Image (cartoon, rainbow, N blue to C red):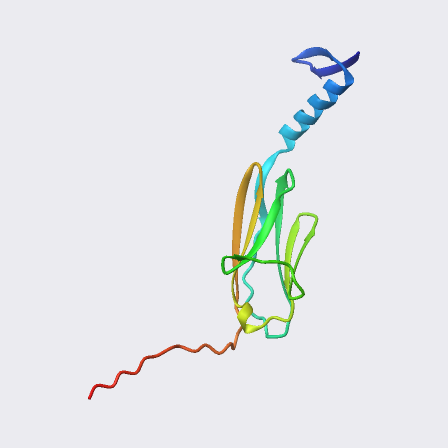
Length: 141
């Protein structure tokens, strides 16, 4: 038998080693579990020129480790040669290579684990982008 001290207030509990491991795992998971929260949210990107690379990043705290997805204009981003998704410890990263005017818009990061879900949005603006406004000409005779 294996002796597990559950604490001064709880006295002693005699369990086998497998039970002790499961209890410890449950106890540690309970203590360490927390929903995702942003330590550093996404920032707006305004001074980007066509052809430059853009790096969007947010820092997240969560346990168990979260799953995450990036979205552009509400549509999930699939990694490609143009858009790379990466993670460096608790920093979630989206790199947009050789930005073009069609990359301008809203980017969303959705982070979730079994404890909760959070989202963060930012806007990529490309200065000098030619914006065409549609106008209507009405001629009455």
